[in-house]
Length: 143
Image 1 (cartoon, rainbow, N blue to C red):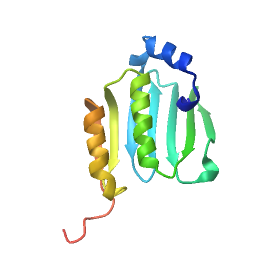
Image 2: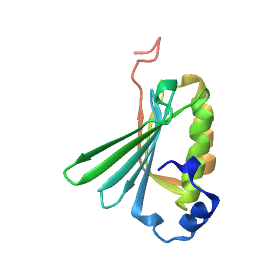
Image 3: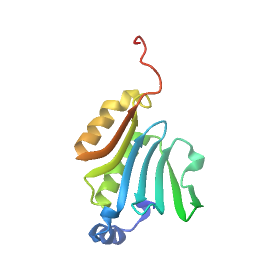
Image 4: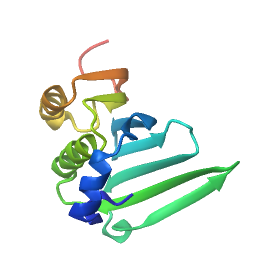
């Protein structure tokens, strides 16, 4: 699923189909930024991963295991947070979603961007079914 490469016609057809409820959408803010889309039948999933590694740009990996297919698509970005936000909006629009199924955010992954990311989520996502807020390193000066 390379959303940036689909035609306007394909996007319009996709948005008018009634299949959007068959997909789970997960957003993750960690050392990498990714969006995970999984069919609710569990047979197909796609991870869209923002990367700082130019060599990975456009790379697509696919794994098949026990009848399930998992794809990873990599996108290089010099400003991954802003591009991740734009992709989140695009995915929500295509799948006609106002909620996401799962949010995982590591609070110390992008400390200087936490407020921006949270404000983005508050203004673009109405609800989240599952949420994990994590912190890898202890806050300095606190016990």
